[in-house]
Length: 79
Image (cartoon, rainbow, N blue to C red; front, top):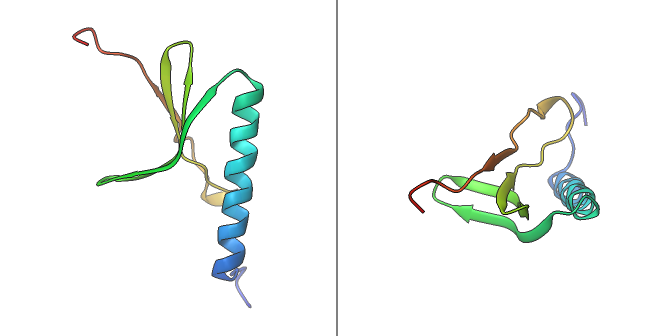
């Protein structure tokens, strides 16, 4: 394997490990885990959590490909 490529099975295992580590961190910090790997027409959200009434959507990335993608959504004024 050249160029830093990794077999697909290893990438999936590393991804699951990273998501589990992120979920454990969030749980230790008071978040409630609502869903993992939620899919919709726009893609997949790795972790759906809640803290203090706010839903927090997290996408877990690794290494150089990682970028800040975690956002929190506050309830709209109209309900």
